[in-house]
Amino acid sequence: MIDFHSHIIPEIDDGSRSIEETMLLIKEAQKAGFTTIISTSHYLPKQYEYDEESRKKFLEVIQMGARNLGIDINLCLGSEIYVSYDIVELLKEHKASTINGTNYVLFELPMQVEIPNLKNIIYNLLGNGYRPIIAHPERYAYVKENPNWLLEYLELGVLFQSNYASIIGLYGKEAQKTVKLLLKNNMIHFLGSDVHKSRTIYTKMPEILQELRKILERDKFKKLTKLNAQRVLENEAIYTETPTRIKKSFWN
Picture 1: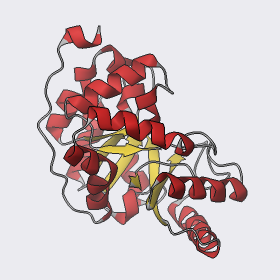
Picture 2: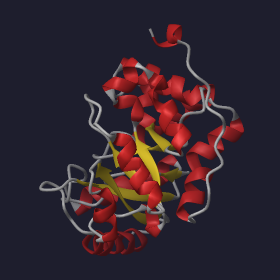
Picture 3: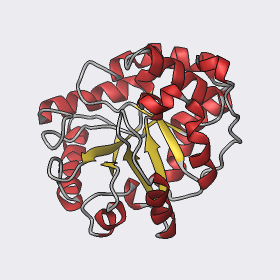
């Protein structure tokens, strides 16, 4: 499996608190069955602003340390960018990062309130050759209220990544219900741990995967846990399945 979303670089955002915790996280990931972790540290102006070169060097040191400990896992660079009207400039100036140097960009939205003119931000990304991926939609209040919110953005070519932990209710029952609806209706393309601390997500992966297999057919399970992410890392196109509108009775 490939972990599409993680916070493993120590002391640069609200993720890992030390290099020791980072190594523990990587060990946990390997034990859970991950072969690759994409490091998507937060990029938030005036709060989390480590540039691409700094994060790349950090990740190289972590990769070397993992190999010295006999941990066979690949680490790739990315960012989880807090949505901004300047997102294209942040990428071009190498402040924030695409996924593994590709055209794919992971960003998150406000949890409670929709951002005005989100379509303009997406059009700007697409117009500059980027492929937008929105992180953990099931956690947003406006998506929990209306899961079909995703449909107009899917039509534009936006992709979506959900969190593994949502599937077992670690972000609440509403997020759990929402992620299952999104998965069943072909609105999710990647899964990530969004891990911040040790002994949290990776150690629960057996339970999570068991629940996930109840929701997804075998081929779709492979796409969401590995194959789609692999295509992103190689900067290849993602072939999506047609999403279906969710009947209101299912989420009320």
